[in-house]
View 1 (cartoon, rainbow, N blue to C red):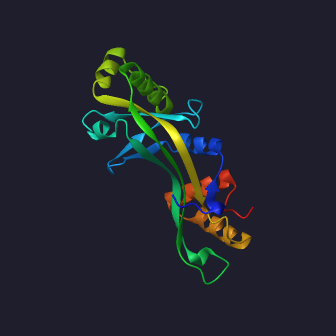
View 2: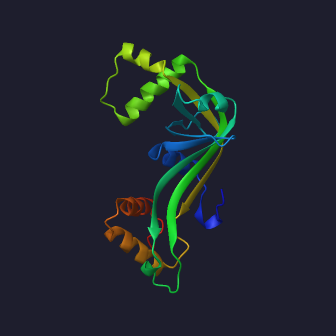
View 3: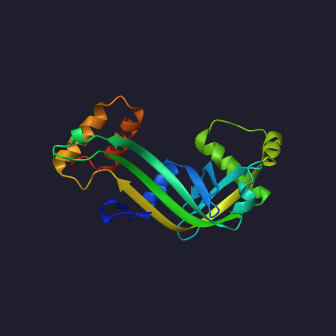
Length: 199
């Protein structure tokens, strides 16, 4: 991924937090097959952490992906940025976004690990849901679990932080007033990160 220094996320901890927050990812194998899947991160497993997830058994991607190097793309909030929001003129339209890329070898997991991953996934997204053991066993027959030991991580926040304070304030103000949910989510992300808001 092309990352100018001004937009680079250097900290593994920050990238891990990003992955946990925006955990629905595109898993792309070297034959350019892609699956969109929720993933769980175990940040203390391996040098850069390990990702766990599962394919539907009917998704034949798992057969081609096993043992292959994959690219995993996590996408955060993003939005169109109008040049009319800048103090500086002339300027060009652009798109602000945040993303983390992870690479590693995908390995299929045994049934016990797959069931554990299924349990942990449900607990993360729906902690009050209880799945009966018999039904859980039935579910496990329809999925194929996997893990990815992360070999490399890249993080990018293109949030206009390279622009002047006045330009950043103009963008932040415009995003905060828009009716677009997508733009509002980006604005909240920028506030939480303290990036691109003129500080």
